[in-house]
Image 1: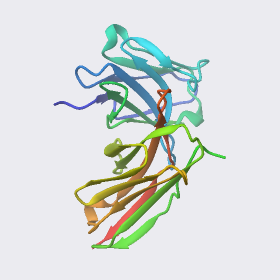
Image 2 (image 1 turned 90 degrees about the horizontal axis):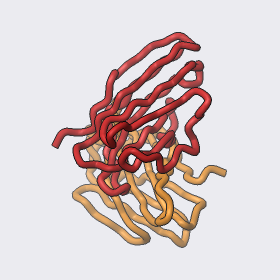
Image 3 (image 1 turned 120 degrees about the vertical axis):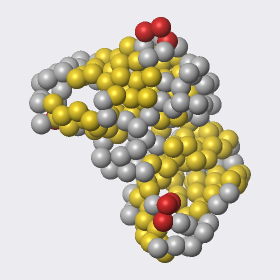
Image 4 (image 1 turned 90 degrees about the vertical axis):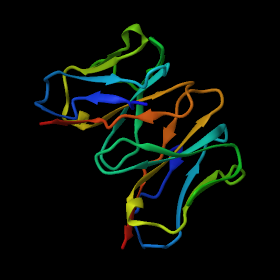
Length: 112
Length: 111
């Protein structure tokens, strides 16, 4: 069974630029999550999708972050404009029934 | 006060030692408890998944939940250098969908 795929693995951008991350979940997994993990901290949920509907986006900074999951499969997370404090690893995860989550390798973003 | 507290370590032990990793939490509604292992520059990998109080064993790993004390533990027997990683506890309540993670404990097992 293929795991959660994320791209790119690494990204360096200047502040105020925009960036997008892509995630392909495990086939058949209805629930998709985007987490932000700052160095030395645990993952923090940004947004959770159930199929193509948003279940929880309470911690998503909506003035600069957006996410979509078209057709209930792949998802993209965008940041525009980026700030220095957005430097982190962005993790995508998926689960079959909203229980056990399987994570991708993450995208390491550095904002300079 | 954070909902989930976890000592960041680092914790350094010799090969073969028994390792004890712990988390405390404040939300009594948490019912599902998980332990993830995260190697450097990798995503978290689910190790153990338990519901409510009690023990669960899987090979060298034992997860323990004490809801009365709001305290969970992960024990690793016969620790190996390959166990060197960051261990994250996580928990979720029955009604919500959000999983809350601890900050993670860095473990080093020396050969």
